[in-house]
Image (cartoon, rainbow, N blue to C red; front, side, top):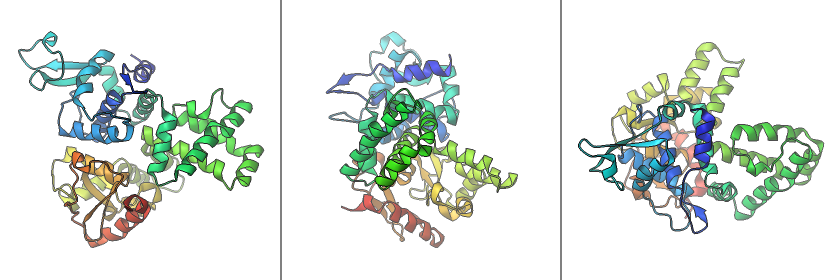
Length: 377
């Protein structure tokens, strides 16, 4: 099967629609699987219903749920079989026909079409698959509003940005024949970048942006960052920037690429520093993510390679830290954002502490300042 075949399948998942929206459970399960493939927890075509999968599912579910949606990862683990590419392996002695719903006693594990599993191993393909899944929910504008306000913007700013992208900027792009559809109907980050890049060069855009105190350029950038976040394409973009740089030697490029994808010498030096998860002490390497404290985009090349700007964290802690829902005081005490609903479900508690080192403090201070609005009661 081709990539386009699976993109179409992901956009048209057999989801249940209740209370005016599509249920996000299947979407969250597939996003969780791709997360675990990306960080090496799933390295063969065998998806077990374990704590790592459930935690990753919950991280996505908190972002995509609506109304009275319930955090029930067992439902999609079984019901994804109706979409044709997700399969269940019964335990020995059980026939598939004997399984009428999720049962730990009857299901050994799930697995994907071989072609799909191979596609999911590519970072470039994963970004397109993630966006295709989110499109399945058919409410990108609503998700965008929640995303913007989750970054601390006001309701008014969020609506102004969305209104600009949906209205004036979409009209301008179509009038100039840059695109045939509105900007919020574009479901690919890369396509969005292709379409919006020429807009910045238009005199009409520049004049509107100047009169609007840069509001239009801010809106375009913000919606692009939203699509990038949904598709998690920042890593791929940063790697491309590194490889195309004329200011770096081949050795420097190799070191920076390895640091960006959480592998190589940077990851090894973090293991030497921390021995295991910097918060829980958990030591299984496959479950740990090498994360930058001061975000990659904000760091110098030296800071990007500095192991003091890195933490080894379990996947659930890494996601929460990376998105600014948790941080740490200089003494290591965890700070939990008021926006993080039910942190206990993610295994996060206010009793946690980071085994902080003095060299980490300046980076932790930057992280707290970056997300300080998240921690205001």
